[in-house]
Amino acid sequence: MRKRGKKPKKSKAEWYAVRCLFHWKEPHDSYEERITIWRATSLAEAIELAEQEAAEYGEAGPCDYLNLAQAYHLGDEAIQSGAEVFSLLRDSDLEPKAYLDTFFDTGTERQADGAEDAPRLKGN
Image (cartoon, rainbow, N blue to C red):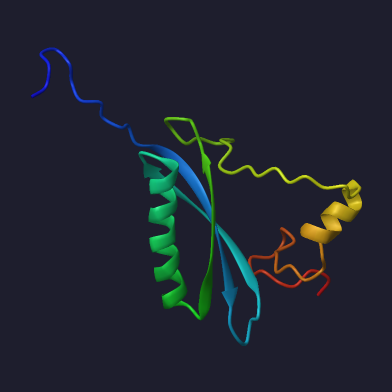
């Protein structure tokens, strides 16, 4: 029996961003990082929701979910322009240019240059 005047604590749902990784099968042979946002009561719940969706996404397309989910608590009640939706810190001894070349600008990214709608391999 509950003591009078005390209400059970209710977990409040908050916003979380979760990054999941996928490997696209032939003919693409590419890797995809997807960041989705979730309303959840904990980091663990957000990851669980994202992993369920990631499994469905992988089944619907010719890709495999790589079972890697990284979550970030947004902390803001409302999502608005300029809101930080994901952040990941990585320790590295690399100099800035080498770091970018190693992790973000390898030359094999499929990305638009801003003038095109369709993604393409950088340098093509």
